[in-house]
Amino acid sequence: MQLRYVFTELRTGLRRNLSMHLAVILTLFVSLSLAGLGILIQREAELTNRQLGNELKIRVNLCTVDDPTGSPNCASGEINDAQRERIQSEIDGSDEVAGARFQTKEEGYKIAFDQAKRNGTAAAFEGDNPVVTVEKWPAAYIVTLKSPDRADGIISALAGLDGVSRIVDQRDELGQIFGIMRILKYGSWVASAFLLFAALMQVANTIRLAALARRREIAIMRLVGASTLYITLPFLLEALVTAAAGVVLAGGALAAFQYWGVDQGMAKEVAALPWVDWSDYAQALIGGFPPGIVFLAPALTLIPTLLLTRKYIKV
Amino acid sequence: MPVIRFERVSKRYAGPGRPALDQVSVDIDKGEFVYLVGTSGSGKSTALRLVLRELRPTTGRVIVAGKEINRMAGWKVPRLRRQIGTVFQDFRLLPNKTVTENVAFAQQVIGKSRREIGSTVPAALEMVGLKGKGDRMPDELSGGEQQRVAIARAVVNRPMILIADEPTGNLDPQTSVGIMNLLGEINANGTTVVMATHDHGIVDQFTKRVIELEHGKVVRDEAAGSYGFQH
Image (cartoon, rainbow over all chains, first blue to last red; front, side, top):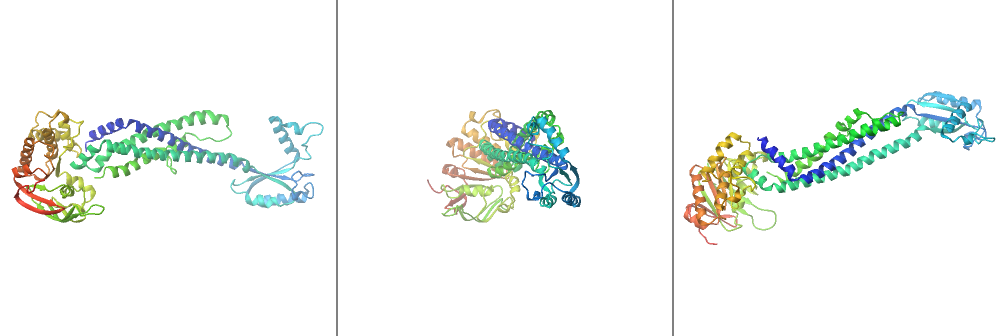
């Protein structure tokens, strides 16, 4: 097979349909960048879940005098020793609990007061007749979970016990962050899917135009006995070149996001959270399931090319 | 063993109407020169396209070079076509390639080496009488010369069969005679020539076997026939 001819045809084809190829490359660039971003966000959600999940705790507030929650568990007033022992034994007997710590009213009040002072919202704690006092502050059990996914058993067991005012599940608060991440991830994937579909249509149009522009040559090739592979090879190579260009641009954009957005940006601003690193970037490029953009792009251009060349260049 | 055999071949296109070919049985031996004549729509082009395996018969068998081609796998078709040269009324040259490049194209796309192309293309151009015109572009040539380029391209791979569909249809009588002489030479060298034509002057002047089709049926097959009807 004369590859010189194939490469000459490839060069001619790329030049002849330059504007269409550029359109395909740009669409691929944006859609692959979004797909890669979706993979990185998913990875970020996993990392955050793994780290924060292990630190997630359940706070079991105990009843105070005139408990403000109005919980029926607090009908007998401030928690007594018997009620506390019952709660303690329930926590100790649960297989969902890794450990628990009792926090006195004083400890809890001090932590909340310090926090409020830092945030400039300590007015409720101060003055002659403060709204929040040590007496009104609930003592609590801080329960650490074995697995962040399993807490329903202990929560339902404690919720009905006398002396339990309120159970604060920290997972609910972090759930909002995970929810935002989920929206970002699926949002980028949906946008990416639409754009990838647009890229697919553009590839189909490009093939149709290229086949039309070369119809005389293709007709002669068929008549003199050129193989299907030989006739379709320039088309397949054109598809590969556009895919490669799209991958290089999207890979560059994702690298820029990783460096300036994550390493130099968010990771420095919020050091407490784990952040995606360059191994995750490599994963977004190569991937497994879903496949990375390095495999996604050629599949997106080669599959329609193979299907359409079979239609337009039938030997 | 005939080089082309049609065994009760019928070809019906989609839609209503009579078949394009209807129970056609014909043998064409190696080295023969055959005119395929008939009115427009008589089935000539369908017969030629069946030989090239551009179409498959609805019923019957088409055997070319000993192979039943209607059962041939798609990937084997290019190899079959390398044994068949094709010439058309409208020449079908590539306008952006020189004469030499047009002829070489037929060899490049089937993977012949540059060395082989370098020797066979000038020989083919010399054979068709275009020596020294290899660097010309098609639009710098007369109609007869363009058809000679097309013939050179058709025979450069030394095919067993040459299919010529109205090769003199766009040419004046004098130029047509030149083209017929050339086709005669190619036939004399052992290539089977099947020529579909409306040119009764040519058929009557260069007497060969004539197969006449009418409404998809063979109505005449004469070893040394004339055109036989006027249109």
